[in-house]
Length: 122
Image 1 (cartoon, rainbow, N blue to C red):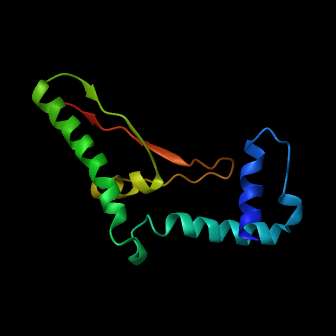
Image 2: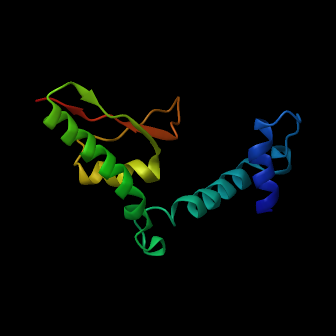
C-alpha cells in the first residue's frame, strides 16, 4: 500500500495524467502521509534514530554563515550571505542562533523550505 501511495503522491507532478488517489479514502491518505512524513524526517531531525545526523547536516551551513559574517566584519563592507535549505538543514542553525519567533503558520500555504539571511553591520 505504501508503494501505491508513493505513486499517488508523485504522479500529479508528471505528464502522464494519472491519479492513484482514487484508490484511497481521505483517512487512508492522511495516515499514509503521516507515515511517509515520519520516515522522511525522523532520521534527519534531533531524535535518537538520527544519531546526530541533524547536527552533522547543520555544520557546513553554520560554517558558511559564520564565515560570511566574519568576512563582513573584517571587510567593513555591506555583505549578505544567502543560503537555501530544507527544514532539516535550517532548523539546527535556527536553534543555535536563537532565532526569535521562528514559527510560520498559515492555513493557505505550506512552505517546504526556508531561507536564512544573516545581515551583518559594522
